[in-house]
Length: 176
Image (cartoon, rainbow, N blue to C red; front, side, top):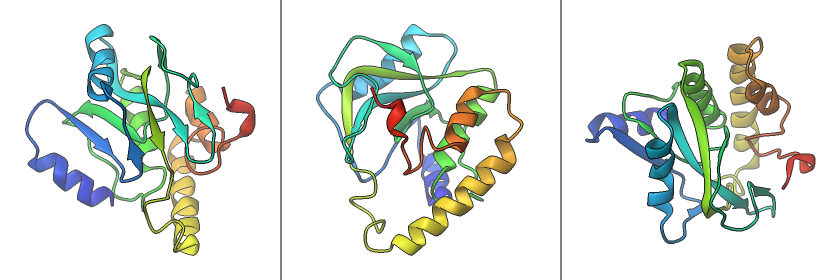
């Protein structure tokens, strides 16, 4: 997966790319909302949108609101075209790793809550049809993420490693 996305980025044009999965549904003005953090904050390195997950979990406010907050959540993300995904990740946690690398470079990750997306995590992929493969991808991805970010000074990395942000194990105490 990561190799295919990187190949698509390399053949793209422009300064920024937008990456999304096949399990994302957007609302009107989603692209404008994705671009806005780059126009508002000079230190923006990656932008995403708030979401309602298929499980019912809400990431960010449960309704559209004119608010931009820091995040690491990015199933639909925009970033500078110079970045690439680490191909060591089999699928899961590769996006979180990319966000953390952008943050470690001195940039920030922002979530715009003006145009929430619907993210039906895994509903449009083999996740449901092949849970063993999904579990393997999750385990390998989390292991790689922990190896790289275990001693990170970033709280966001700790939240991801503990299942509070990202992956498929959202912790209920972090719901809004």
